[in-house]
Image (cartoon, rainbow, N blue to C red):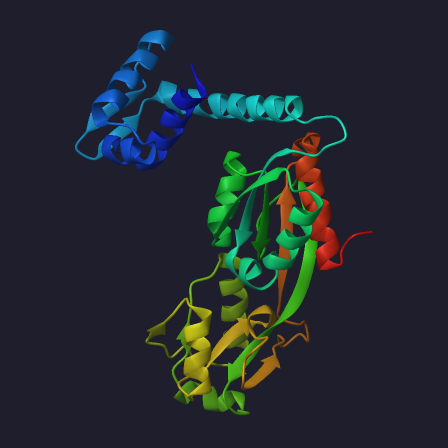
Length: 287
């Protein structure tokens, strides 16, 4: 079984569709089907079932998949270690970054890292934190810079913690908010739980018909007096309006944290350790 075979198994487990997987792996449906048949013949078992709902994994393939993914990660580490000339940092680091961090803080991190380690390749994706968390669990990325709280028992560095703010065009009492539309946006479970708690404690109703995920658009609406919202401070550097840090009835501040999550075994790759060190230095958390 080759690296490409592992990619086929992983991709089909996500898409459940021969056509989509063929497109993503830049091959034809017929070539992909032949390769699947060859893998099944090599292993002596059926890995997929074709149904009206698409391609389904058999119990055997579900059991095999975590093991082949682990093998792929180990092979990657071996190749990275073997390709690293003594005294010269090289190789690849795979990083997932939450969209807000990517927008407001990542440029400085990348500038510093590339200047220090020009021969290290960076594979980077900016996505929603829940998606990055799943990629980290599956081993698709070496580390993730995530916003919010996720269950993680391995490496966890808190990079920052900032207040979550009430955002309005002019100073307003909380009682006035119920008469205005709330501009909502998609976030993660921990943030939504905090927002719901704050609203419930302050008897504020989520009067909404505006679901907008682009922060720039939200800012423009607020600056024109259209509704109100709640946002972490990281989004408000250039906002021309009123931002008020929020707290719960207990006096506890409503805050949002940024975490760098990683598996310690990836630190065998020196380029991963170097990237973590650079992030810590640029965020002011280096000891």
